[in-house]
Image (cartoon, helix red, strand yellow):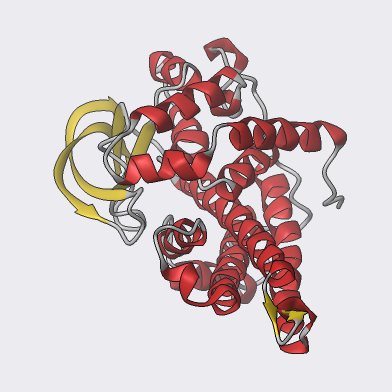
Amino acid sequence: MRFLLETEHTDLANSIDSMLTRADLPAVVRAWNDGDRDPGLAVWARLADTGVTALLIDEASGGFGAGALEMVVAAEQLGRHCVPGPVAETLGAVPTLLAGTDRTDLLEALVSGELATLAIPDDVPYAADADAATHRLLLDGTTLSTGDVVTTHASVDRARTVSVLAPAETVATDLDGTAAFDHGALATAAQLLGLASQMLAMSGAYAISRTQFGRPIGSFQAIKHHLADVAIAVEMARPLVHAAALALDGSVPPGGDASRDVSAAKVAAGQAAYLASRVGLQTLGAIGYTQEHDLSLYLTKTRALLTAWGTPALHRARVLRSVTAPVGAP
C-alpha cells in the first residue's frame, strides 16, 4: 500500500497553507479567544471558497466527492495553523453522517461555508463550538436530530467550547454513526499531526536563535535528542493517518479493519502532539507558558484535542478488540 501523497494532495496542502499564512491565524485565534468570531468566520469563508468544506460532499450537493485522504490533508493544515472552530465536525463527521440522508440542504450549507457541530453520546458527549456553529446536530442511537444547547462549558483551549445538546427536530432515522465517528476521529488525528509539526518547527527555530554559553542551544545534545524524538514521533504517526484515510476510502487489505486503523492513527498522532507540546515547552522555557507567545495557542489546543472524538483509552480498546478478535469474527 502506498502511503506517499500524490502531487494533487501536496498542491492542496500548499494552497491551504499559503492562504492560512496570509490570514495571520495567531491574531485570528486571539480574537476568537476574546469572543470576536468575525475574523475566524472570515477565514472559514475563504476555506469554503477554496473547497475545503466541500471535500467529502458529493457532487450532486455541490461538493467535490473527494475522500478521507483529501480530508486529512486539509485537516492537517488547519491544525498547523491552529484554526479555531469545529474542524473535525465540519470537514469530516457531519458530511459523512448527512451522506446517508436526503438533507441536501444541510450539505449545501456546509459547501457554502456554514459550520456544523455534532455530539454522539456516549463516545462524543459534547458538541464542540456550538456557539459558533450554524448547525448543531445530535446523533442519539440511530436518530439524528437538531440540537438545542443545554449547557456550555469552557475548555482548556480558550478558542473552544463544549456543549451538551438536547434533541429538537428529527433530521433522519435508522442511521449508523460508525463512519461519522471514524471520520471525526481521523480528522482530529490529522489536526493533532499538524499541531505537532508546527510545534516542532517552533521549537527548532527557537533552538537555533536562542544562545547560551555563546552557542545556539540547538547545538547541545540534550536539545537535539528531544527534538529528534518529536520528529520521529511525527513521522511515525503520519503514515498511520494516511493508511487510516485509505482504509476509510475503501483500500482495506484482506483482514483489515478501518475503524482499528483510525484508532491507531488517533493514538499515535495524539502521542506525537503531546510529546511535541512537552518538548516545545522545555525548549522555549517560561516564555512558552505566556499567552503572548504563539506556542501557548498550540499547547492548549493539543490538550483539548487529545480527548476529542474518543479518548486515548477508548481508541486503544478498539485496537485491542480488533487485534485479539478470533479470525473471521465480525
